Structures are given as structure tokens and as C-alpha cells.
Image (cartoon, rainbow, N blue to C red; front, side):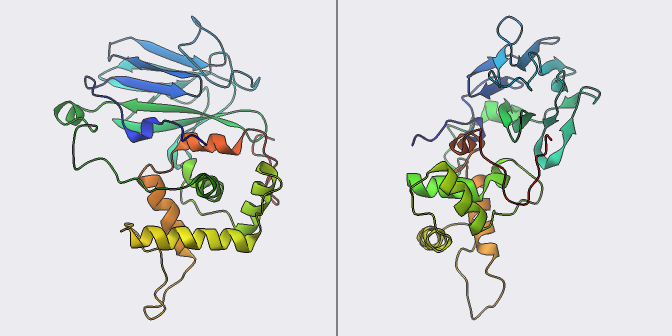
Length: 264
């Protein structure tokens, strides 16, 4: 099970203001030139520069565009379905253009059913010209080792974190067991087994110096249900888990019990 590359892990050295854009179909790197526009959507070149959702008819042929103006890149929705940014910010065709901050911004394109297609954006900042992330010894985050089953399990439990929802919480072990049974039929995905696997990961990473508490100190008291939240938060912040890992869930998942189709 290969770990997908991701702009969340940084980019190669480039002049300040350079735009990096990536989808599952490829990527582009564009200099900060006034009036320059990068388009993305279901279409093909020369209509779009970055293809996204090529097999999803809910994605417009030209679904969004990024234009460099006033020393910034501005995102605009030109499609029929919503764009979703971190912290639940939604953009539709009537929304004013949104300025991108330096660094990483994931954009989710609403598709059919439960599908959301990821467009990763990264704008190189001025500080990176002086100390590029890939050359600075103290800046890269520490990534934590996970085997294939652990990664799949944690992506299922932490998918709301990878969707950059505001105030995310883990799926329950019951919900995770149902999704995993669908994704990997024939596997032993009982709730108790999932709980034991997560406890094993927590204890291993805690012993390795994980930045957040992963074990419950009974003497100190306090809720133990935050330990999984701490684990997922730390794995996402360290880019051990990145948004492209959501591809492990596939696009045709059935809805979780009790959840309605948001695209309904």
C-alpha cells in the first residue's frame, strides 16, 4: 500500500509566490505573474491546466480558477457545485474570490454522492526562499512509522481530520468496523480488535516521544476518550497522514449509519 505524495509535506525550493497545484491526475507549478490564471476541472487541456474529477459528471469542466493579482493568488469557483476549504468555508459561483495564504491549502470539490475531489494548493512564502523547508534541519516534522493495516485503520477513524473539518472527532469503533468490512471484506475488523490495534499504536508512539499524551494516567485522572483524538491530531500535524491518504477509502463508500447524503 503506497503512501501518496502530498503538498502538505512541503515543496521544492521556488521563488516566493510560486503556486503549486496537485490532484490525483498530476500537478502544475506556476510562477507569480500578474494576470496569470490556472484553471482546474473535469475538462482537458487547453480548457483546464489541472484535471480533477475526470469521471464525475457533478464536477464542471471548468470548476475553479486561480489568478495572480495584487501580489496574491485568488481562488474563485466557476463550477456548479461547491468548493470547500478548511474550517468548513464553502465557496459557490457567486462567492467573491478568496486570497490564498502562503503555505498549504487543501480544496475539496463537491462531487456525486459522498465524493469530494481533492485539489492541493501550496504557495511558496518569502521565508522559504531564505530557508527552504527541505533544507532546514529543524523544520521538517517527525513522521511516525505505520504498517499498511494501521494506516488504513487510522485513515478510516480520522477521515474528518484529513478533510480539514472544524473541530473534528474520530469515528466510533463501530462505524470504523462497518467501513472496514466494506473496504476489506473478509478481514477481522471487530470493534474489540480495532480497539486493541489502536492501543498498540498509541503505546508504541508514546514510548517513541509522541508530542501529545497517548496513555491514560489513572492517578492524574482525566478523560481517556481524548487519547484517540490526540493520536489523530498528531499524525495529521506531522504529515504522517495526509489528505491524499483518503484515496484508501475509495470513492464509492456507502454512507455511514445515521448520516445523510450531503450532496442529496
